[in-house]
Image (cartoon, rainbow, N blue to C red):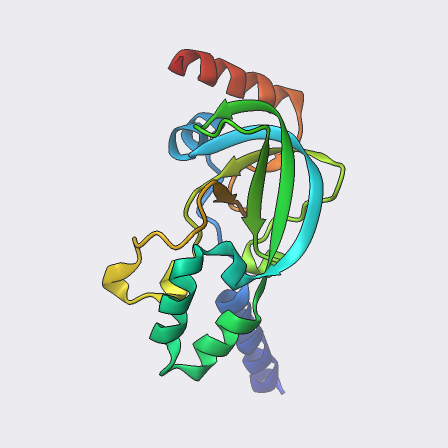
Length: 181
């Protein structure tokens, strides 16, 4: 009986490790500011699930499909996986080179995949990266730096400092922004 209990605990532990999101943080606001391409606070104006292929440059989708033809499991995943597309109206930008007042952010649909749960009409501080983590699944090892993602879109997850708006973090980000100007 003891052996059976230990076996169940071991299986659950291994399964949890394999499927659960693991983050290396938490990082300070200053550390995250240094390493993040876009930081802003804004309001969610839309949220919808879109096919993973829709998050990529259109000329790259056929390349990815062609590379996956020999691996049916990865191809099926690529063709069936959905991502949340979140559109924000930017209230204040702390870092980044976009000149628009709206931005598209992508995140995985589940916390187990490190996705961040955004709610429509809520306000967040968002730390966004131009690169997603999807390339490693679909590109050869030496080719993972290839730029697959759509232009002027960003990715975030719950391993970043992305959070509901709070004044203390916003004040710290303003100070960091002024140091950089």
